[in-house]
Image 1 (tube, rainbow, N blue to C red):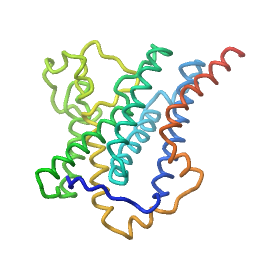
Image 2 (image 1 turned 135 degrees about the horizontal axis):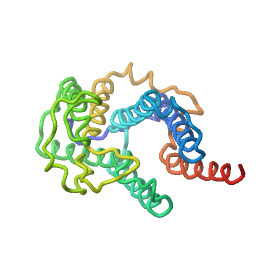
Image 3 (image 1 turned 120 degrees about the vertical axis):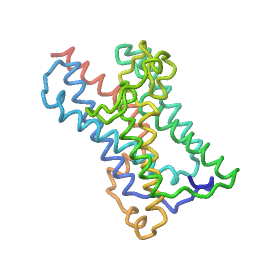
Length: 259
């Protein structure tokens, strides 16, 4: 890890905002189809099959990698982490009160907020102890390998997707409060679940990608231009994320009532 010396940037990297905006549009489309299938009851076989799963995972991977990549571009990373974590708590409260069947605990906003705060803590320790910067190539390789190795830890084994390398001891999954780490107990349930293990390793993969690209001025200069409409969405992604699902739910509820 590098020391706690946040880098200030001149303006924004519009290409990164545009990419975030594109991912946001895809996420809204994915959730809209979710409501079509599970609220209106319209069957969409490809959506509920492997193609839909790959689409959903590509959106999640994109957001998490991009968040890790943009960590050092934030002028106030601690405040940013607390804001995103607070938004995650708001989603938990809203779903608990309004949609208990879709209750969300330790969703993607929890992950992004906690990952940023943990990264700030590691950053501060490295600065305090004057540790040398970690090799970005080694950090990239180790975190990507750790993500693939631990992808199925919340399901009880090591491995990636359908690849099961070895089961983990059942006693690790006895306490619901360990769900945030990736070890959910028997009583834990959430309709959107992104624990630290394995997803923090994907976040750190994005961070080390920045470590490789951020020092190359010619690379970063190419990220300054973007697509205005998508860049606007990307700059306001947190607010749009919080508002889009209630808006979609209201629209499809009205459709169902008038059908």
